[in-house]
Image (cartoon, rainbow, N blue to C red; front, side, top):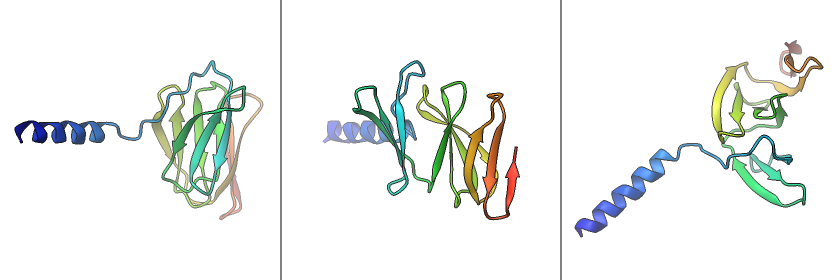
Amino acid sequence: MKWGGLFLAIVLLTGCNSGNAFTKINKSQSFLATVNIKDTSLTFIDENYHAFAKWDISEPFTGALLLADKDTILLYGKEMEKVQVYSLSAGKLINSWEIGKGIVNMQLLRDGKSIVAVNQSNHSIYF
């Protein structure tokens, strides 16, 4: 019984430590990412059209934007208060930006550094 309690404690602690870590994506790897709106997930597909990772995100995102560094991906959605910033190589959330509800599209501008966000709720554009 003593060992059973120890095993249970280890399993619980391991589960608590995992947090929101996802499969790490090497930024030098070629991939296609699909935004799965219905089940709020991202699926990563390799050059041979095989899914090699799936990130289940618990937010109602409707779009994603990969930044020029090929490691940072932004997730946004009309019903989300924040834009979520993920590192592909770390496989985790690294930041979030308070922007308010209503974001329906984001684009990286030609300079590779500036981002434009369209807010449908208040009919505005953010840079």
